[in-house]
Image (cartoon, rainbow, N blue to C red):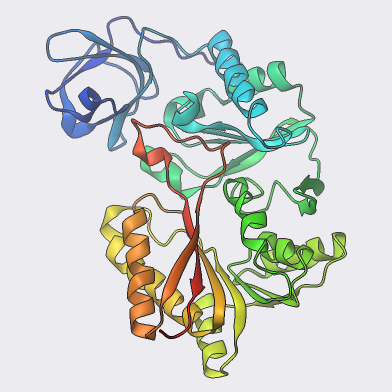
Length: 398
């Protein structure tokens, strides 16, 4: 039996003056709540009001979270099937107007598409759903119904095995929500074929947010000796091999990832050397062996998920940048990426500058990279922007 969670007309919170919502932000922290009224239940849709009792819209509520409420509408609104269908249709229309294949894309990117905590990735007729907020986790059945109505998918897979759920008091879970387990499937992006095991791969199956950077970086790969660190399923390395690299070495700590990269190379008729091991140790060993490369790519997982660990994360970024710079031939390129919102663009650039200074080398910025357009960024919600990347050229001596 499906449980429906309706908003209570009297339930809500009054927000203190000078809270961030008055500058346009959609999150309300527990410290910003002046008063709670109507005894709202966890996961309920509530009314937001300012300190003069004026309505500010509708939000989802979770008193267990530091972010106690997330606004999803500037007017009174419940979360029912017609609402979810409208939001899904609008999100998909945005993707259809982007210069990408809407059959392999992120269809819903949380707050950026008006569904806080909902991530929906499409891989042809198989969809992967993730819910990281209590309210939408309670409404998974309703989400599945809406997805089925809009897209008629062959299968919907749940990948709620992300640590992001912990902050909402949610446990890890995965499984099949609709249809039959599709097993490994093949998808094509920019002329490259990937075999994906959506039920068991990292995150939701493929890092779609960075795929736009594959060809951008690969244009420096022709005739180059390439090192692809933190390779995951081999996206950068495959793109470089396809672009005519002399050689490509792909490294990841996960044996499952390197096996997937090797399999994807085979599918595409490309040559890729894979190694399984810790990236920090691997880079250190290559430096000791005085190896040299024309292109080094660094695409690590997030080194920090909160402000408290930013300083230690920046030390990690600096170290891998220093090791990578020392491996570059004169005129070689370093392509480096960061997927943490808390490690800002300037902090990340500072780690590159500090590494170049220690290496006594000069880098010239060639290109900046950002998350793919199906991960839209909201001007009033800076947390929706998290991925940044840069390609540098190692300059000769002045």
